[in-house]
Amino acid sequence: MAFEVYTSADWDVWDKQFRRYFMNALSGPKPLFLMGTKHSSGAGNLGLFSNIMHVGAHPPTVGILFRPLSVPRHSYQNLMEQKQATLNLVSEPMLHKAHLCAASFPEGVSEFKEAGFSEEYIDVWQAPAVQESPVQLGVRPVEEHRLEVNQTVLVVLQVDWVKLQGASPEKDGFLDLQKLEAVSANGLDAYAGMKPVSKFLYAKPGRPVEAVDSFIP
Amino acid sequence: MAFEVYTSADWDVWDKQFRRYFMNALSGPKPLFLMGTKHSSGAGNLGLFSNIMHVGAHPPTVGILFRPLSVPRHSYQNLMEQKQATLNLVSEPMLHKAHLCAASFPEGVSEFKEAGFSEEYIDVWQAPAVQESPVQLGVRPVEEHRLEVNQTVLVVLQVDWVKLQGASPEKDGFLDLQKLEAVSANGLDAYAGMKPVSKFLYAKPGRPVEAVDSFIP
Image (cartoon, rainbow over all chains, first blue to last red; front, side):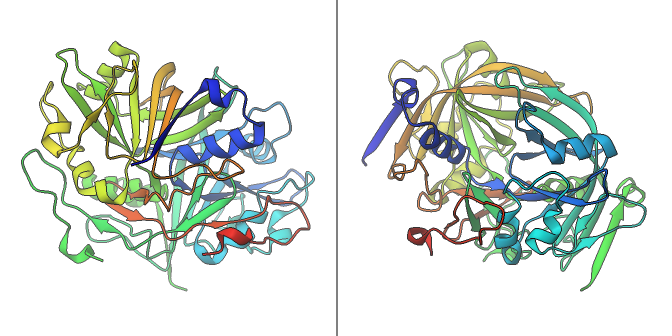
């Protein structure tokens, strides 16, 4: 099969935008969430993020990586000022509006209004959630690490509440993201839905890998 | 629409496995890679990882989160001893074999042999790559952060080479992962392929979100 090998001898001389697109696609399909925060003026803010990873189940925690803080980062600023935010899973019906939230709006402008999402407030939580999202998480920052390699900032978020719409966990706790029409990000400006999910038995040496019956597409 | 809200009052009393499955699915579709390393005995090692995120484009870097080092972690040990590894994107034809690599094999056993993957060596790189993978990255550890919340370990990996098989970057640098049949992980034991990718114009305030023509599915 045809193949090509690239090294820094190639990418050091690539156009910056070409390199950005290429490198951002290399890390595979990425989770896609809208972070909801509240600006000190009261305006709801939404930022689109794909640099998110599971950190732990107990306490439930996720990590989010912010670009270097050399320019204003509204989501980061609001998150740190208010010590809370929401993460809202992006589903297929939300995709066009969600992509618009990646645009650079002036500080204090509400991306909820600009993109056409509905603000929703859960109990006493002051950061707005996206009503249209099937999986909303109420999160607060508990830890921060500055990465030396490029000054990006990893913030560990603890999950205080979860709201599910249109789906419940299966009897083993599993949540089928394809049924919720979850979207993954491919690089910077591209996205894909999920094909039906295949669920396997827990992997053990010597045991053949078999699909769990109820999840065979 | 029916919905349900969960808090720690719920999950603190859930069965541990139920909680693990639930929380691992909440962070959305995740990238899926096999990390290839070499054990000091010479045996090739493969570990299956979904806790991976893009860190930066220049230098090209990705982050990987390891479970707490309270028990032996073969991939981590080999990575730190040899100061190099490969990351191999999991594609649909590789999925059954890849899932088996999540099993706990004894130290020094080659998951390449157990799962039936072919070891491949690129130039002078000593860590083995997975021949069957369409996107292979040669990586080395450059930075490490212990997360206080649960003692997981974030390792930042710098990419030294990239091998692509069966696809090339588009003229803007973009790499269509769906054409490579990339798989995403849904929680712990479930996976999905990607539907055809939709690529949008760069988001700007006031500009309608439009698909880039050549990528309309």
